[in-house]
Length: 408
Length: 101
Ligand SMILES: C[S@@+](CC[C@H](N)C(=O)[O-])C[C@H]1O[C@@H](n2cnc3c(N)ncnc32)[C@H](O)[C@@H]1O
Image 1 (cartoon, each protein chain N blue to C red):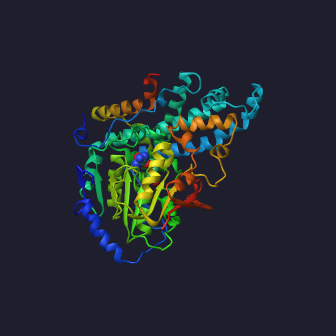
Image 2 (cartoon, chains in turn yellow, red):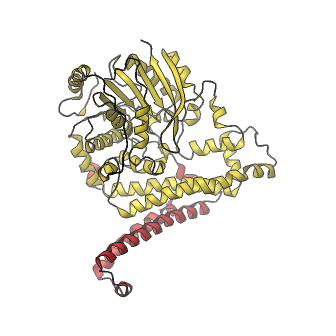
């Protein structure tokens, strides 16, 4: 099996732990618990929270969260409301065919559009820079905390410094400095930064809890092993453990610092989950192994080519009757929807697509939003169904559920 | 070099986005100034908030003396510490002027 040069597995190596856990869980009936996030008690409210003991940083982040909302709700709408008049003033039809970089450059001719765009990018940059500065200023403390957690339980951690990372995984997604792989504190920074992105709707993993609650079970109801692909900082992973307390739950991610922080966080939450630095397209798990595989907002950050490999790998490691439920922005909610149709057409939509991908470090959204995921899933032998009732995961976030079942 | 750099950190070289080199308003000076203004907004808010928290705490304890606050003069050592904080603050707010576009 995989050459684990660095394995921090508590109490034994991960492989041994798999065997032990497996025999334990197969005897137990599947327990499914709906997670209720109750933040009415202080203890619960603080459970998932990332709260640095740096008042100025917390205030700056709070300001930037407010400012981001302000730009989205007050500044950008002004630009949108003038877009048609601006196009008309330049004698350009609003549905003129333009490439997205061209359309963006054209829209920047309107000063309101330009400063709305500038302010969005600036807010994102400042969010990251203030966090990077904080974590590196306190690097020794944060590093020691991780080193201690590396060797703690109840869950396990596997880091693979020799893993060959595909180029596409090294981008600075969301313009986060260093991306998921290039900063020792990528997980810390991602956690604090996404608190800002979620506009305070996910301070206690509410979104991840509702996604875990919405996971469809295999038809026979048996859930003994669950895998979260591209687990990031392990928020959906620990939510899965909360939902399926008796199952063996794994989270894998390409980013070493990401799984390391996942494990630190799970240790603090006393959640017995297993994290490994591995690739979603090459998970090293045996055939027919998992009952449920999920992923949350991973696919829009990988190439089409990698997505196809990941879909095939998920099919391989799922047991017959097992389900694969990826959540992402790019999953078509309806079979007949084309991505272009969903995104809208015309100059403003094309410009917006460039702003979202180029200016926010999302190089793969354009190719992913034209991929037909259900079709790709069927090609490798899944049957697919969509649940048209979207998962309401916090106010601005809804995801159509795409359930792919490995035929029994 | 901080000690942490010697410890394994499981990182690899990332592919840089280069977004900091983008000029969006058509004029790099304006781009810079807008970023500085927002950064200042964050600093000012942090400062106002700290003040509010402090005043609340001090008031609760009955230790605040406004006249004394206005008349405050730092010692040499305090001044050195303040200077260090000020320099870090300037770097935080104005570092966009150092970008090489
Ligand atoms: C937007 S993040 C989402 C993280 C997490 N699911 C969450 O709930 O926040 C996408 C994650 O996918 C990971 N990822 C991207 N490509 C991957 C791959 N090929 N294998 C494993 N993880 C990958 C990234 O490192 C990143 O942590």
